[in-house]
Image (cartoon, rainbow, N blue to C red; front, side, top):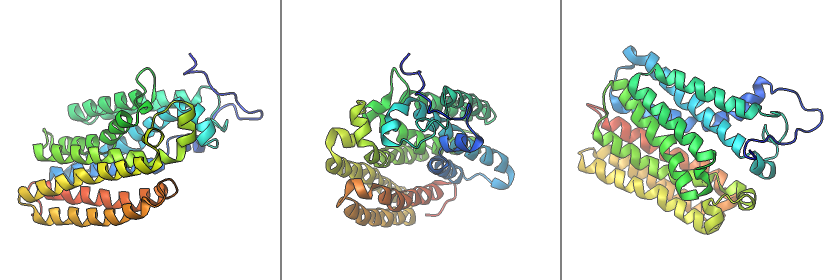
Length: 305
């Protein structure tokens, strides 16, 4: 039961959280990647938004504010003791979300996510169930995949990039997506493993104390950064080669250019992996997702060569 016991609430704390605190718990800044990935699925489907825009809107809402927000609430609840060290101003350790309210929000947002996922048909609901399972498995015991930086970041990368992309393509087209779309989405999901590592540099002390074996904890900041760079870059090399072999040279060139620019950004990041991780999270990741959209557009039926 220790995993469910709330932190001691500071004296003078409110009895329940305000809407602003609930929104902070859901971390809107993290919603963009899965929303963008779902947008890549929309682009890859080739579907007309004039006819399908309500489904597209609902899918983007589900990918970001609902499922991703739910995953953040789940993670903050089961990370509350770690956050008390790494990020004491977060809603739960600061006492602004007292008692079991963090758990209540996580459960409630899970139910809402599943309900909205059901509105997207069998493909959308199945993907939502899988995303929910991965979110809880990542943060909650007994699996708590985040205890290992290899498995935890893999689950996150696939959930944030590959799953929304494949789901968007399936939901908007109303059928199983093109196998090439699935392959490219999975490759970018693997690359996102490295992006997830970027978030681990800020919490090395707390992770080490509570036995969370993130890559920076296991390998040290310098080696973890090198591994993250390789993991981010290698799938993009494969994507570029595949696009070229499929007769899509323009998209392959775009992927190559953004990968080259990422390489320059990586060179700077590696000078100070811990201090510059937030900088690379903005500069390098923007280039990464630009390549995603270029690939998605090219893969659409009748897309650019």
